[in-house]
Length: 107
Ligand SMILES: [Zn+2]
Picture 1 (cartoon, protein in one colour):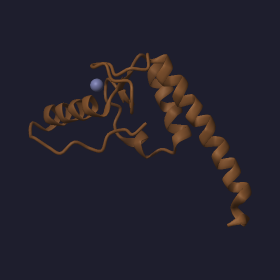
Picture 2: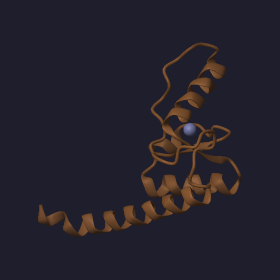
Picture 3: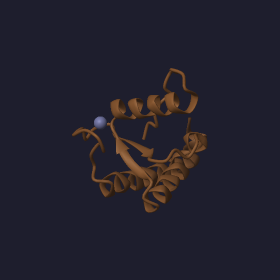
Picture 4: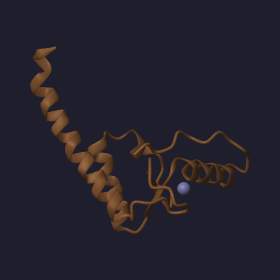
């Protein structure tokens, strides 16, 4: 368990920074779901979908991606319910068929 301590340290430092960047991002977006009054478990959502590549990025990279989208004015906060509804609508529009929503952006 101890041989990875140094590695763990730097990983947790990184994730602490990412967590702070995420907090700042959420605060900067108003700290509330864009379509309902919820303020908990908020997800970052690209208003104009930017594909799903960023869903597979490690957190620090992903937060940076979201900040870039935010600076472009293409980011909003959604609670899990509103996010699933939006994703379902997008899939519906894109394919013209009903489909299972993809797992939401768990930010
Ligand atoms: Zn909502």
